[in-house]
Image 1: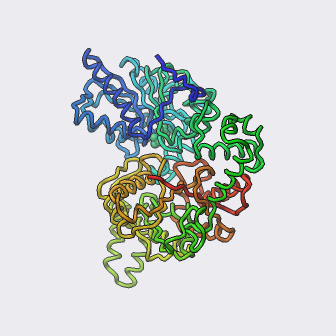
Image 2: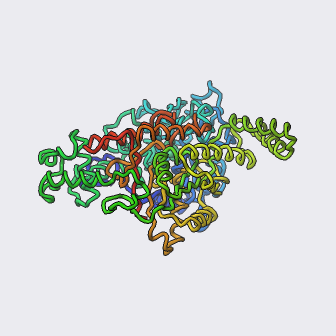
Image 3: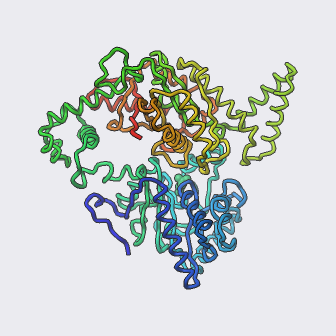
Length: 637
Ligand code: PGA
């Protein structure tokens, strides 16, 4: 039976949605359910039938199941699995095939009989696709139907590969992938052009037949689609919304993925709220945007007609509320991101002293820094602060082969000219490795190293343009990334000790970092975890007590106005200079700008757009009109 959560705050939700602090807890809850059904069936000598998903989302769940097998002796001998989908045209041993993924992430680590694991066959001949898909459905039925179906969700609203347009009755079939889905997979395939165009997927109807469904979602990139699926009328534009008709479906999401649900985004619309300072700020700024007025022009009716009458009663009048909010917002603006020496700093985001400051900018990969805070970095350097940029990972996975071949040819030619044997020899080795790896093979350590060096040179060039002292760039090459691949990273103790050593060496007065709220297996999220752990280990240090940690939101996104604690305006020239800085990252030109943003795939326009947009919002709220703004949120660890 479905358990409806009928609390007022979730009244708009048409699917039971449970919000967890993080992916960890949400995954454990599902792992426990799976364990219970496996054990229950074991008692009666029956099988448990699981519908499984791939992608980053279920990785933690699979890690937990593996742990249960290893540490608690949970046997999978009575488990039968059916995976949702497979890329069409990929063989099971292709590194990006979903069969390979399942072997690596789960099957090879538990005692499930090989014959019990089913993944659609990606290599079936075109004329046999139909029969093969029917056979897949029959096999599910023959096994007794799916007991628990695990789902992720794509930003298109797909479940499995049921892209927009998939009806609620659709069955297992061959489908064409949406361009946004292909863009999201571009990193895995080292370029969008390599991502298969078709896939075989269970249908929405097949999924709806499962006895119980858990959909999991993490990170802010999923927030919008989760809100649509949960709160809006079912439509084939968001196939996941058809889950509303399932009698036993639960969405387990983390805070970031829940952030666009009405009860989180606009709680005052669905019930009484406690009017804390941040809640008031959020609500009043929302109101101003909603009624399209600057803060100082809001009147009592605006408040009372938009679910904020109690706020008015509590605070007295719209006049007081407006002024208060205007001042708060005004005080976020500063052209002095390192603090203004000699100035009264009681209403400034950053302290005046000490001056100059030691500012540490953490960039998960080269490009994040200039893309998100190029203007701020330029100001910090100009205002005399000691700025270190630490690139947490090398970013070598995002360098196309064509770029490294160019570098190889250059090195070989120069090596021959100068009879510099060692370099030329190294370059030839790298060339051989590239030739041998085939289209989707993994790069050797040597190839990755050279690719990393290319990104270093781009980072230097960019930093130089922004007026930074490039002897203060630090390339950490964190091992989680060097030894890993997309969607499969995991933090190690070595990562943390490298980060800790850097913090202790610099003892920064301020740190700029990103990754909070991102997909937990993404490079920024893990880079942030590494920082968080390292900070924990530095707890009690004098420098840390005095250190402000400023969060930037990440590639292609920006904080909402009510979240911004420091807004650094950029002049037209500064914005131009920043864009020039971004241009230095030549190898990233065709890369997808962000895993968390719909929109143009050209990173180079996106930064400009985002910063202009923030300035427009400030302007609309009735504050000064700037060309562009970079926003930061103060992190209270
Ligand atoms: P992800 O993919 O888990 O890698 O985000 C989910 C999906 O596309 O279904």
